[in-house]
Image 1 (cartoon, helix red, strand yellow):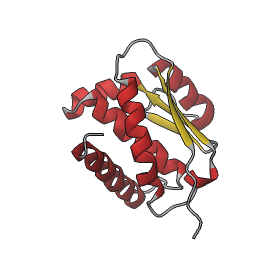
Image 2 (cartoon, helix red, strand yellow):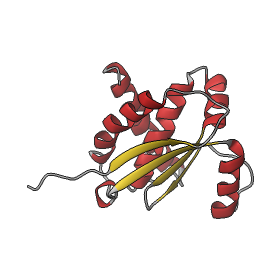
Image 3 (cartoon, rainbow, N blue to C red):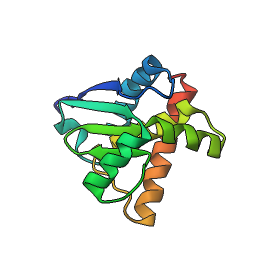
Image 4 (cartoon, rainbow, N blue to C red):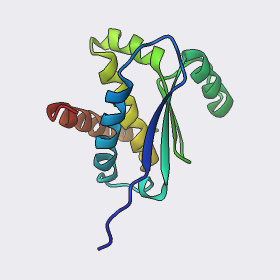
Length: 147
Protein backbone atom coordinates (compact mmCIF):
# COMPACT_ATOMS: atom_id res chain seq x y z
CA UNK A 1 0.00 0.00 0.00
CA UNK A 2 1.38 3.41 -1.02
CA UNK A 3 1.89 5.87 1.87
CA UNK A 4 -0.63 8.69 1.99
CA UNK A 5 0.74 12.13 1.25
CA UNK A 6 -0.60 14.92 3.44
CA UNK A 7 -0.70 18.58 2.47
CA UNK A 8 1.51 21.27 3.93
CA UNK A 9 -0.35 23.35 6.51
CA UNK A 10 0.34 26.94 7.50
CA UNK A 11 -1.26 29.40 9.89
CA UNK A 12 -1.59 33.03 8.84
CA UNK A 13 -2.57 35.78 11.28
CA UNK A 14 -4.49 38.49 9.42
CA UNK A 15 -6.03 40.21 12.45
CA UNK A 16 -4.56 42.49 15.11
CA UNK A 17 -6.96 42.47 18.04
CA UNK A 18 -6.40 39.09 19.66
CA UNK A 19 -3.02 37.80 20.80
CA UNK A 20 -2.55 34.05 20.55
CA UNK A 21 0.27 31.49 20.39
CA UNK A 22 0.90 31.28 16.63
CA UNK A 23 3.79 28.82 16.92
CA UNK A 24 1.79 26.60 19.28
CA UNK A 25 -1.19 26.60 16.91
CA UNK A 26 1.11 25.71 13.98
CA UNK A 27 2.58 22.80 15.95
CA UNK A 28 -0.92 21.64 16.90
CA UNK A 29 -2.02 21.85 13.24
CA UNK A 30 0.86 19.64 12.10
CA UNK A 31 -0.12 16.99 14.68
CA UNK A 32 -3.88 17.29 14.06
CA UNK A 33 -3.65 16.91 10.29
CA UNK A 34 -2.76 13.18 10.21
CA UNK A 35 -5.35 12.43 12.92
CA UNK A 36 -8.06 14.12 10.86
CA UNK A 37 -6.88 12.33 7.71
CA UNK A 38 -7.08 8.99 9.54
CA UNK A 39 -10.81 9.49 10.09
CA UNK A 40 -13.21 7.96 7.58
CA UNK A 41 -13.49 10.51 4.81
CA UNK A 42 -11.87 11.82 1.68
CA UNK A 43 -10.36 15.13 0.77
CA UNK A 44 -7.29 15.98 2.80
CA UNK A 45 -4.99 13.82 0.69
CA UNK A 46 -6.12 15.53 -2.52
CA UNK A 47 -4.79 18.92 -1.39
CA UNK A 48 -1.18 20.05 -1.69
CA UNK A 49 -1.51 22.78 0.92
CA UNK A 50 -3.88 24.13 3.53
CA UNK A 51 -3.89 27.73 4.73
CA UNK A 52 -5.53 28.49 8.06
CA UNK A 53 -6.19 32.23 8.24
CA UNK A 54 -7.09 33.97 11.48
CA UNK A 55 -9.23 37.02 10.81
CA UNK A 56 -11.38 39.59 12.58
CA UNK A 57 -15.13 39.31 13.11
CA UNK A 58 -15.55 41.99 10.44
CA UNK A 59 -13.66 39.97 7.84
CA UNK A 60 -15.35 36.67 8.62
CA UNK A 61 -18.77 38.38 8.60
CA UNK A 62 -17.95 39.64 5.10
CA UNK A 63 -17.00 36.12 3.96
CA UNK A 64 -20.06 34.66 5.69
CA UNK A 65 -22.37 37.04 3.84
CA UNK A 66 -20.57 36.87 0.49
CA UNK A 67 -20.30 33.09 0.22
CA UNK A 68 -23.07 31.73 2.45
CA UNK A 69 -25.56 34.60 2.32
CA UNK A 70 -25.73 34.70 6.13
CA UNK A 71 -25.34 37.98 8.01
CA UNK A 72 -22.92 38.33 10.91
CA UNK A 73 -19.72 36.69 12.07
CA UNK A 74 -19.23 32.97 12.58
CA UNK A 75 -16.45 30.89 14.11
CA UNK A 76 -14.97 29.10 11.09
CA UNK A 77 -15.53 28.96 7.34
CA UNK A 78 -13.88 26.29 5.20
CA UNK A 79 -13.32 26.44 1.46
CA UNK A 80 -12.78 23.09 -0.24
CA UNK A 81 -9.69 24.27 -2.13
CA UNK A 82 -7.79 24.33 1.17
CA UNK A 83 -8.53 27.53 3.07
CA UNK A 84 -9.87 27.67 6.60
CA UNK A 85 -10.84 31.08 7.97
CA UNK A 86 -11.15 31.39 11.75
CA UNK A 87 -12.44 34.42 13.65
CA UNK A 88 -10.10 35.08 16.56
CA UNK A 89 -12.64 37.45 18.12
CA UNK A 90 -15.41 34.84 18.01
CA UNK A 91 -13.01 32.28 19.49
CA UNK A 92 -12.26 34.64 22.36
CA UNK A 93 -15.98 35.25 23.03
CA UNK A 94 -16.77 31.55 22.88
CA UNK A 95 -13.86 30.72 25.21
CA UNK A 96 -15.35 33.07 27.81
CA UNK A 97 -18.85 31.68 27.24
CA UNK A 98 -17.79 28.03 27.54
CA UNK A 99 -15.17 28.74 30.22
CA UNK A 100 -12.35 27.32 28.13
CA UNK A 101 -9.22 28.97 26.78
CA UNK A 102 -8.70 30.88 23.55
CA UNK A 103 -6.18 28.23 22.51
CA UNK A 104 -8.72 25.45 23.05
CA UNK A 105 -11.34 27.22 20.91
CA UNK A 106 -8.82 27.90 18.13
CA UNK A 107 -7.75 24.23 18.14
CA UNK A 108 -11.39 23.09 17.97
CA UNK A 109 -12.09 25.41 15.03
CA UNK A 110 -8.94 24.29 13.24
CA UNK A 111 -9.87 20.60 13.59
CA UNK A 112 -13.44 21.42 12.56
CA UNK A 113 -12.13 23.01 9.36
CA UNK A 114 -9.81 20.08 8.67
CA UNK A 115 -12.69 17.65 9.06
CA UNK A 116 -14.75 19.70 6.58
CA UNK A 117 -11.84 19.49 4.13
CA UNK A 118 -11.83 15.73 4.70
CA UNK A 119 -15.45 15.45 3.63
CA UNK A 120 -17.37 15.80 6.88
CA UNK A 121 -20.43 18.01 7.07
CA UNK A 122 -22.55 19.39 9.89
CA UNK A 123 -25.83 19.95 8.08
CA UNK A 124 -27.90 17.57 10.19
CA UNK A 125 -28.09 17.01 13.94
CA UNK A 126 -26.55 13.54 13.54
CA UNK A 127 -23.65 14.71 11.36
CA UNK A 128 -23.08 17.69 13.68
CA UNK A 129 -22.94 15.38 16.72
CA UNK A 130 -20.54 12.98 14.95
CA UNK A 131 -18.27 15.80 13.86
CA UNK A 132 -18.31 17.36 17.33
CA UNK A 133 -17.42 14.02 18.94
CA UNK A 134 -14.50 13.48 16.57
CA UNK A 135 -13.10 17.00 16.88
CA UNK A 136 -13.35 16.98 20.69
CA UNK A 137 -11.57 13.62 20.72
CA UNK A 138 -8.73 14.82 18.51
CA UNK A 139 -8.22 18.00 20.55
CA UNK A 140 -8.29 16.03 23.83
CA UNK A 141 -5.88 13.41 22.47
CA UNK A 142 -3.36 16.03 21.40
CA UNK A 143 -3.78 17.98 24.64
CA UNK A 144 -2.91 14.83 26.58
CA UNK A 145 0.31 14.53 24.58
CA UNK A 146 1.07 18.26 25.14
CA UNK A 147 0.59 19.34 21.52
